[in-house]
Image (cartoon, rainbow, N blue to C red; front, side, top):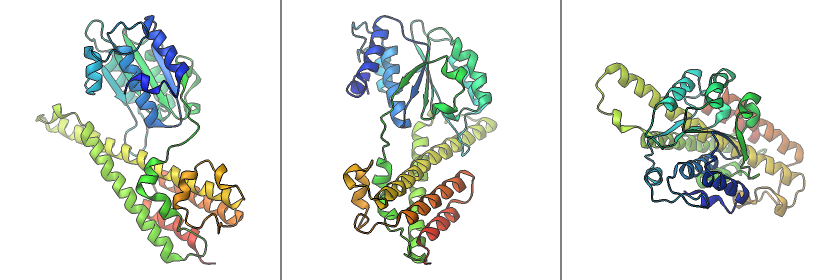
Length: 340
């Protein structure tokens, strides 16, 4: 996806980036701040291709024909390094950060740009951020670093001060995954006085969705796996590669699961707005109403809607605290549907 595909949404940012490219004044470190991690990654790839392009377009656009452009299009650009959270902890560790530092310090072909991307940089702990400061301040020659975050408040001021900041906030969360998986239709059945049978049925269906997400995470990790290591014979290296693959699967699963939990909370928050008398046309996510059933005609009381939000928040805290998922789901759904 070229940078020009983002021109309509962010004309000023794209124009400034293209001007920097045309003038040969590409920055060495950028902090991309947004509210959609997937969108930030797509934008960073588009800017990386533009910055790495060997064409001499006067407007700074990527030519699409040079070798770097072709390699980016095939997702095979060799001087491209990405680090992202791994394992259920969703943390980027100090050791992983040091390995990333080492990778981007390696020599490349003359005239070829090295690109290092830190996905979900808010998952860097303070120690890992401090370990990255020197590289961020003085990257190796011919290197561009891109830090992506949906929560810039968790980054140290020393990190932010060393980057050119770009705001790619859209002020609207995309709940496409929840819509695709039918989550809102399930949540529409969770009502006060509905009873334990309804609650447990909803919990089972949401648990099934989580299982599908785990399968999706496995497929994604397999697609991203470096097949050049398949013929390795060293048992210790094989074990390490297997552990790293499992960590990638778990990290991707937690990311997908958390996006569904965010959608659950958004549903109940919007339900509270309806219970408080907000008109349908003023709701922040009217697309959810297709699965709302008779919610507009028979909303819960504001007090009930507020209590339900708290149940979902408790569920989110339990899951992030490694309480067993299905147990937490059952408890949440039963609490909401309990007959009193």
